[in-house]
Length: 480
Image (cartoon, rainbow, N blue to C red):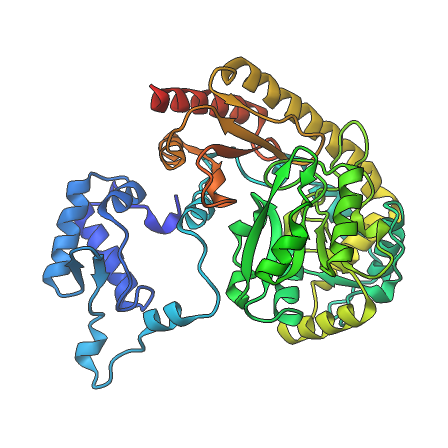
């Protein structure tokens, strides 16, 4: 729970009065402007850890003072912040600005997931990042400690030349030949998608992608006025036979794909399917965004080389990142593509943030140039394989009768398919009430009511076991 929501239960001031004062302070300070929807009574009771009757009493007092008002069908909203009574001109209507912004808000369930992740007590069975215990924090500190000179200034538009040289060398091991001038450093893969959406595409364009897809969990293209269109997958990756027809029907502008250890399904696209996809898109003149952020996280054997390694016409924009291997806090990734495209997008990047963190760029360049990165990957692969096997063993023990699943060859995710038709929303709610945070399938495909994305990368072994056993019980309870 956030510190700001805590009450002093040892105080002589009654709890309802403390809650009244808290909400009134939020309103008067302008943090909750006129029109803000107050959280439901149930949520307020959970946040303050009090009986619902205490909340009802506090809200009644606020209502009597004219600060809030309850409207049937709309909930309780801030009606007055007292300043509108004291001044001739009313305060700015921030709520109308919030609603008119171009960027789409996250889905409600994504907002709830993001909020719940701030609770250190919750078991996070869906979080797509490395556990803090797997991040190389000490080695990062040592790199900065040994540094003879650090730049705190802005880097050039495409990013640090030294880092781009290191990335150029690094991706050669994946069969990709790209000079530093055709590489741009970005603040994570998501920024690369944002730059593409505003720099290369027209409003109304259609983006093809695998379904289900990570793209549905972020609104980067939708907020720029584009439409998403999902193409089915099988166990070898995206199915290519309908792409040409769909392009003509829907005016497809480009295709986004995660060939290696797909998010959320964990599927590894076969080498034959990669060739099919590239040849189909070449024939139909459809550019490809290849997201390879999980490509280094293989277990027994490396995945096939990226699509970009077979690209002879500059058809593919290739995205890589350190967020899934060194840590999301570094905010360093890269995009590889034709120089005119990289020049265009780097100009836009300079207009928006003046370049990625010079300190993070320095650290990543050191990791790549020193050989530390390869050593680190070897350790991470071993740890993730152990966690995957541990998770599969739990599934074999507790989920055999209620679900099926894939066994991923790398990455973070297991795509759990529940056998019987039950409400995935109810599963999510009941699990959250039990202190378990899930990523349900409808986050990645709004019509999906059967799947859960499980991640073995973040929770501890103890949490994985406890959380999964309880999840099995919840599914069985809802099945009965």
